[in-house]
Structures are given as structure tokens and as C-alpha cells.
Image 1 (tube, helix red, strand yellow):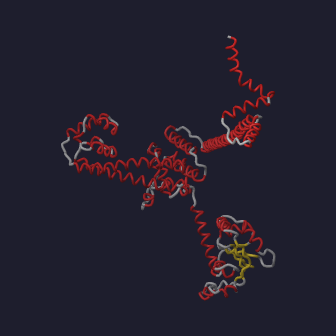
Image 2 (cartoon, rainbow, N blue to C red):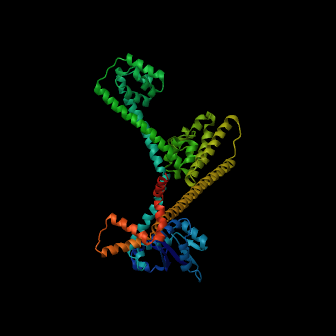
Image 3 (cartoon, rainbow, N blue to C red):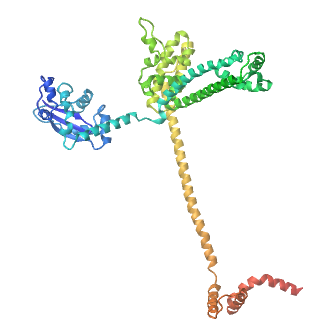
Length: 534
């Protein structure tokens, strides 16, 4: 059997022909040490062919494809250089069994993955010396560059669908809840001055806002009743606070009051920031996992993504894992045979709270199944909340089935309906884009037409002015007269002389200039004629 070994390097593919191998003494320490010398290694292996990658992009494509399928470059390389005809049957040795299975399916030849192949692949130590023109520095640079590009391609993600922001937001939201509760307990420091207030307003955030508003309880009056109503949102409570402030007997110094007000303002600002963060989380979940958010809610969906590590990990989990996600302690703490937990983080969903005690396990199993479907659609499909709404309707129908016995719709029918709605929604979006594109094209055409019309309008008045200026027969005669006057010694002419010349010119051309003079002097002549007639 003629054995060839395929070696994949960052610089390209190499095919080595094995001359002689003794499998019995291969594991002896003397033999292992002899592999380190290039001369002894050359007696075992010879380079049959080498296929260098044309670019770093080609190397990355081959690296991504080699774990899943046979790349066209590898296929061409093996078909060209692997001997098929001859007495000895060719056998190909590869490092990985999956690659071997893919190559066996593609070429239909015998593949060897273990045994001698692993020892021969130590050729990586002398690879730069066996290939002409390849140095050790160039080989290491190629490996480093390919490693960086591969890692960069794996880490690369869509910024708008970054589930890492959801993980950080839900963690910060939980931390803020704990901190606000702790700080609100410290605000009860104000209770030394106004102990009755905590009994009237037990809510932490409202209590902090009231301490900031009231300050010294002795300054409360009927005028501050409206401000109290705005905070408490209840007229009776505001009146009770006002009456209690008059009955209380504890005093406080101004310095202590200033410190309490400062601390309460910090707690109020933290509570306001928590509301903003919750709104941000809601919008982010609508972008990253709209179906999961529509099905189970933004907060519970974010907790599931955070606990799984990413949306992709959550999509890979089976429904049974999603059901008990978050209840690992209860699951693995079972030392004796007992009941396993029925639910984990999905217990905070409203569906399980609405179900009867005997149906909680069944609805949690059903809800986990739908959560898995929603997360997979969010991760691997177009982001839209249509499927989430339909899945929520299915859970509602299952709840009513447990209570009343009404048969729910089949999953196939619901998914077909959802797919139709998604297709219609995508069609509407495409039509809107097409309309916008046509409107832009029309506007551009109108602007171009207006631009050409404007140019024509600009050129036309210039032509008209030229036509008006052209009919001046007096111009050359005046030029001649000025030249004659200059020859006679008259360099500058007074207005009186010009008038005389203008009168003399029509005398010379009497036939041509008479109608013009008449047209100019007609109104004056008419007046004279009327006076003479009178």
C-alpha cells in the first residue's frame, strides 16, 4: 500500500509520500529523538507536492471550509497529485477523522487517521526546510496572520443585534434593584425627624421623593398640599401627611437635614436611572430577540439570554434545559430520589402564575418548548415579532384548554399563518422601498428639467438685449463726427455742441430721420396746435 499524508499549513497544502515506516519501533525514545533531525526524517518522508495559497483570504476560506466540507482548492490539489493508477493501492493519511470521512465520501479511497500518520505529521517541525523558498520566519508569520484573521472572523458580529448589551443591562438592573432597596432603608434615617411618614407611605421610591420635598416638617402648610398630591397621587394620603407633620414632636438640626436631603436626592436619581435602563432594555430586546420578548416578556427573556451566555447558546439548548434554566442548584442538590424542579427562570412569567397548581408543570413544559422555538427564530431568521405573538396566542389557548377543555389550534396551522403574515410584511416593506426609490428618481428628474429650463431662461433675455442694442444707425455717424472734431482740435464737447450736432444730423438724412423726430415730438406739437386753434 502506497501511503500519502496530507498536511495542512497556513502557507498551503502539502502532500508527503511515505517511503518506509516501522510501526513496531515507532514509540521507542531513540526513534522519537531521531525524528528531530532533518536528515533522518528525509529518509522516511519525501515532499510529493505543495499547493501555496494565493492570498490570506484564500487561506481563511480553506480554513473555514476544511472542518465541514472539501474545498475546491483541496479537491483540485488531491486530484492532480494523488496517484490513482498502479499496482499499489493509494492510501491517504489525514490528521482528523471528520476530514477523512469527507474525503472518503468525495474520492472513494481508503483513508487512515491514526497510527503512523500522527508520527509522520511531526513534519511540521521541518516543513519550512522541505519547501523551497519558505523560511521559518515566513511560516510563523503566515500562521500568526491566519490565526488573527480566523479569530477576527469568529468574533465579528452585528452591532445592532449585540446580545452582550442585554446581558450587561439585565445584570445592572438587578444590581440597581438591590442598591436602591439598601439605600432606601438608609433613608429611614429621616424617620428620627418624622417617624409617622413611613407608616403612611411604605413605598421606598415615594418615601425618598417625599423626604426630598418636605425637608423640615415644621415648614409644611396648606400651600404644599398640591405638591404632596403630585408625589403621592392621592389626596387623602397628602392630607394625612400634613396632619401627621403637625402632630409629630421630633426636631432635627439643619446640618443633619442637609445630609438627609443630599442622600435622598441620590436615591431618587438612581430610581429614575433604573426606569431609563428598563426602557433601554425593552428597546434592545425588540431589536435582538423580538419573538422571545413578545412571548415571555423583556425582563424574563433577558434573564434567559444572560443565563445561557448568549442568544446563540439559548437557541442551541433543548426545551428541557430551558425549562429548568436557573434551577441548577435545586437539580444537582438532589442527594436522594426526589422530584426534579419543574421550572427555573420561566417561573417569573405570568403564564405559570395564572395556571392552577396541578397544571404548573405542564404549562411550564409547554412554555419552555415555545421559548426554544422563539429563540431559534430570533437567532437564525429575520427579526420580526410576528412569530412571538402567534406563540403567545398558542400558550393562551393551552391555558384555556387546561381550564375549560377548548381544543387549541394545531402548531402547523399557526406557523403557516405566521409565515404568511411575515411574507406579507416583507412584501409591504419592499413596496415602500420601491415607492421611495421612485419618488427620489422623480425628484431628480424634475430638478434636472428645472435646471435645463433655468439655463434657457437665463440665455433668452441676453439675446433680447442684444437685439435692442443693435438698431442704432446714429452710432457710426457720431463716431465719425467725433473723429472729425478731434482732427479740428475740439477734444471735448459740451452738451450744447452735442445738441447742435444732433440737430444737424437729421438735416443730412432728412428722409430717414423725419418719422423718428415726429414720433418723439408729437405730444408737444399737439398741445401747440390746440392752443393756436383756441
